[in-house]
Image (tube, rainbow, N blue to C red; front, side, top):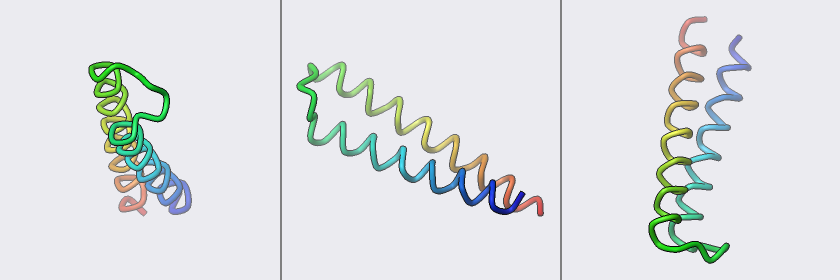
Length: 60
């Protein structure tokens, strides 16, 4: 379970990085509102996955 928690934490950090990259650089040429929506979606997903991983890791 420890390794599952650590893996989820790393996936959460990767989602946070992807959200910031897509929001700041907009490599796909989305409109500003769509880019912000994608950024917020990735940031929310990243935070949720990170904290689920942290919860799983701490239970062991």
